[in-house]
Length: 113
Length: 110
Image 1: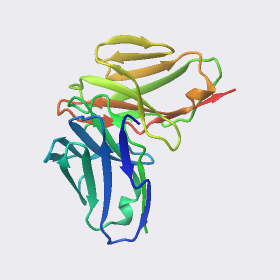
Image 2 (image 1 turned 120 degrees about the horizontal axis):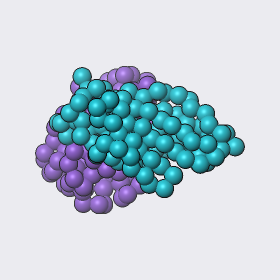
Image 3 (image 1 turned 180 degrees about the vertical axis):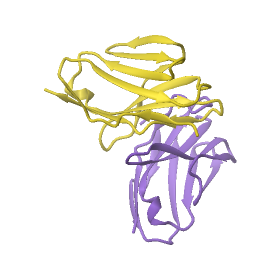
């Protein structure tokens, strides 16, 4: 998957607990994104980053925060997980801006009970 | 609200036939369009992109864009069982963010 590693691949957690998902890339791409995918909704952008320490919100950012301290790592944190955050989370990278020609990681299946 | 709409399917076609997938978008300012293929349980992968009105061909795939009518389509010629997947349409709007449709599931019958 184009040098993108997501961890963990699967996680089950309880409502109210914090959760951090990690995305690691070896492509040295400037842009990194977090999407969630739910049946009937397609892919929805949560947050994205256009450089180290430069991040911005996507369309469904409530309840999520991100950090990017190194070019290769982009972390997504659910401060207090809720059942509505049960989803498949994909990290993606692109060389240029505009979300074009995204390369996706393998995804993380998160279940919040 | 910027929207990308697709028929969810499933679209069932016999092997060797043409599969035709359609996508409409709400924002006339959309500038570029993408088709991603996603196998069940896997991540999306880019198969086509198109920026200008008209057709763009790549192997068995043809993307068609009509900005006046605000639709983009994907044709898969000589469909194979390996083409069975969900196809996601995406559009880039002026704010440089991609919006995805919910996807069309295609099943190719052997």
